[in-house]
Amino acid sequence: MKGICEEEKTLARQAQALTQKLMVQAQKIELLEPKRDKYFRILAKVMADGQEVAQELVKAGLAVKYDGGKKKRWCEASPS
Image (tube, rainbow, N blue to C red; front, side, top):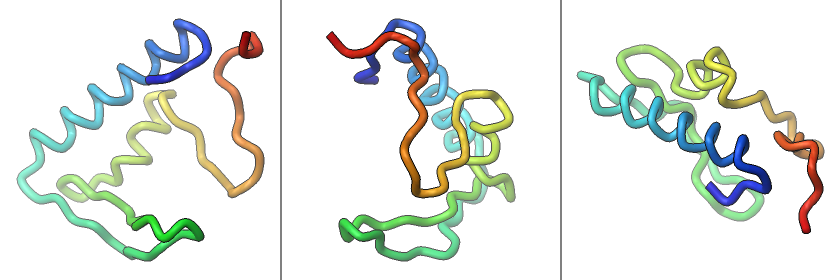
């Protein structure tokens, strides 16, 4: 939501809307493989009726897989 360009902000809103839709419509929500990251945040696979929410966001073009390296920017413009 705090993107650099309007396109990034629009994609963030679309990702939020898809996530909300999947979660609200789900009969069953599960958190699989919970663990802590290096900042002690909880990480888990979020499943909504057997669908991995992260995978649905990737399929919709609203997310990319993250391997722990440098994050990809969605905008070509640099911050002002």
